[in-house]
Image (cartoon, rainbow over all chains, first blue to last red; front, side, top):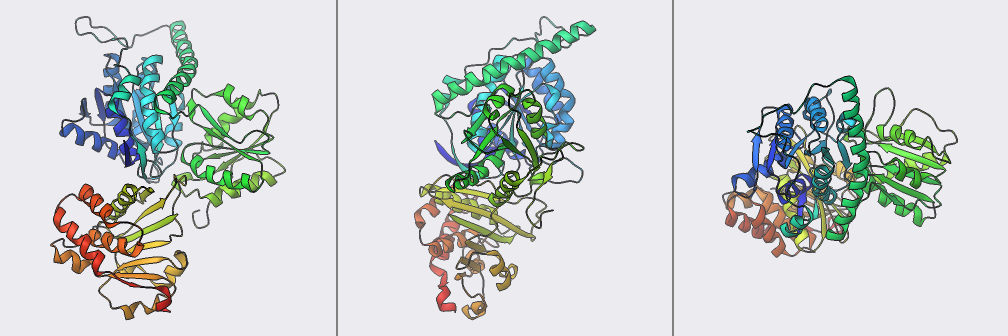
Length: 386
Length: 185
């Protein structure tokens, strides 16, 4: 059924359709409408699962990972400071090989205090061992949550579905909400090891030796490699069932392109409009959207970008003291490619500032005309926004 | 593509008005995209909300900077100079106002819809909530959206006083006075 809903509402629809048994969360803007929608359904007896209103995000994640260890399908949602407060428990959730699914609504980190889209919150959790999927629009947000449960439960790694403040969370758009029957056929009942047994109590987090710790880390890294396979299989099966699939990376017109623009999340959507117009005008510009950030799809990106003479990466995030994080990751991923491309990083949309078609066009023109690549990121903003 | 701005004050139902119209366009078979700028808004402070409408999927995930339609819930928030800076020339502008047509002679180059939303709301016991009167008036000003879709959207979305709100839509639709840009000049 097609509905006119926000991205937050779309995520809540997916959580309900996935027959999530436990939702433990703490409200924070701009994620709160997810929590509120699920609470409304619980109050009306339409949720199916249980809501657990915890006293902090740290506790929310502790509850989710514990429930997952008991074999329960769990979900939480948060943003910004809430995600930062969860940080310690994120390591536990992946280290314990749980299948927790979370929606992170990207929001600026304090200080200063703001409410807008900025990916630095979720990207700061890069090394916590979570799968991360970045969404472009409301439909992809809904679809990715459904896919995330399949992936997390098969791989036994937690999965973060990332949407953006405002541009997804609060934008209302038409969204295809699949039927319960079809979601049930795609996502079977949860069947993961039950590691908490009341009759047989034990430690979920053993104390280990150096060598044992190293072995655990190696196993988790192997699980990430396995996740790449599973994400692809699940996405293809999702496409067969629902008619929509996304890939790790999506490429538009990269073949023979003089310049390939690399984007993530909602900037991709606006860039599609610009790229189509420029291509009609005869410019050889391609577009690559990076959707899966962890595990990072290095082989796919090498294949996709190997023949691109110039690459421009747009980041709505910053690792202070370096550059945009997707740009750094991409450079590292391409370092051993056969024909090493020149990669120029651009910062646009930081703090949720507007990334309009004309701003993207300025980036394209700058990248095309630039003789020398600079190692520092180039800040591009609309007038009056900086 | 229509790019519509809603401008008013916190407490007037601006956000809900944009969402109701979005839903009405959706029901009419269009592709709408609606958003509001949430921040530190408070009751009485200026609030803006936006709606794009097209026949095809809208890919733009950025702000509307130069709308081609405006619903102004508070006439003190607009001046002719600001409208010329902000709006596409020839835009349709709906204003909630108790002023006569003469007052709007200064607004050259726009098609104006004037409606006393406050009087309509009070007539049906809706107090300050003028959004349904404005949505009804907009429907007539726009001219391409059938009123039945607005009724359906209002029925789905208003939290209370359904009949009064539907009456306000109907009365807003009838009461709006439209001045073509040519006639103003």
